[in-house]
Length: 386
Ligand code: N2P
Image (cartoon, rainbow, N blue to C red; front, side):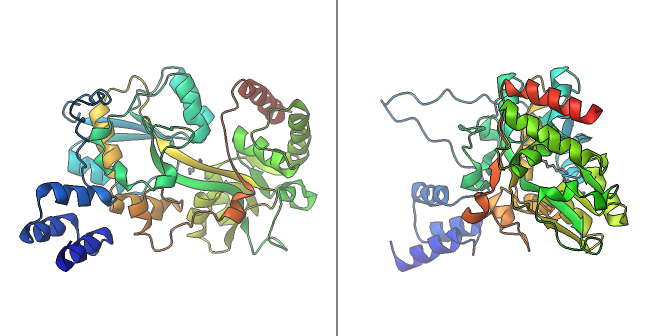
């Protein structure tokens, strides 16, 4: 490779020049189209990569993906509250001439129940990892047509081929984060470092925990040194005792909407996710976030197309759109969560750093509980109703 060519390849690989400039320069230096395509394929990119041609005479590749029809005029999204930037939907509507409706939910369980009831008419929903497994078992997800999402190459490799979607057939990672404690540093005598905070009678009426079975019971399991995916009856019974001991101190079971109460100072500490905590902090810089020493949940939520979706092409266009670096960066700028989009992350002034190996020792991914889900459901009902 000549010096000029190496310089050009390095420039496109490091992002110093864009692909169009690279192609112009490479053609000028006499590079063949095949060589240019091969170089571009090597860089994680935001533009379409041609599907690999089947090897002549070799074993046949996977069946070709279907061609989707033209984009529909509407798109219905069902996602967690406060989880998308203000400009994400309006910009999409304008560019694609497609009307978007956005309904919100506060837990995976709420979303799954709605899909199971056959209600909604949604084209995209946003489950956490374990909920993807549940939707898969219930056969409630459509397969993606990957050729219509060329920006998939922008996803950081650690968020692809996950245990929840090993073949990347159903999911596009959206945001990742951690469940911990949001607190007012001006209201607590010392920064909290344990789930025991919610057992402190001195804070009665000033603390909240999330209205989320997995995060709530999971925290009490971790508090006793157990896995937050436990289905062991003795461990769950101990979690119930702790959950009830905390309940007398709680002002409410409340998830994302607690932010306003933290900002106002009605709540001193709340079990909450890191990104929502950052959103509240933007309004009051006395708000901090702590990960309890006993450990906590780490999760990555993804967009998926539920079975029966009617606006399949619009859903694919939206998936490809949110994977653009600038759109992904705008979303994480607003949500305060980590972006699984590598190119978007690079654009953020303060990206959430991926946890170190040391931190990962106490963080745990939530897994599908399988048959244990019914046991947890029952336990959660008992905790909330006693
Ligand atoms: C929404 C945050 C959702 C994260 N505000 C839960 N995985």
